[in-house]
Image (cartoon, rainbow over all chains, first blue to last red):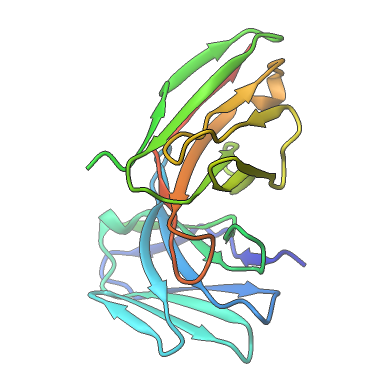
Length: 109
Length: 114
């Protein structure tokens, strides 16, 4: 089992839709999680951290479910500009964070 | 703010040539990382460093070398370029390796080996 695993997608959704991605992790001792966004041929950029209590930033909500070992990202009112690959990142007990392979989102007009 | 700066942005090498990918950060971060990303794939960790003078292997270190003589710089060296090393290389830095400290990335170096 991969340390951090994501559905590669693509998720094709219409503008205005709500879409959610999940990411599972294998190390139950993992403490830190993040969601990054990566546009085509660009560097990954931090979208938001994932806290135990969940957190929200505008149209984006991130949640952590420790019992089932997954984190989620919910995007409401999708915009064309949300089209990107979303990377799930976790602390797997190593000295470096572990990146998932990414979930591709395509928002269509 | 410069953040993490990588040079060059693009490079074409012939098989067997060597080169150094440069990475520098001005945030006084202790941790620095090198990743490669093949088309349509995720990031794979090549090497990382937890501070000046300390480096360690990541997931795919073969064919690469690194050094960390200063806090700011973390160059990646390819000694004998092979076609399998054609990829996009990202350098990143963070305050610490874990504990809610995200990584900040450079723009990447696109390397083709022919």
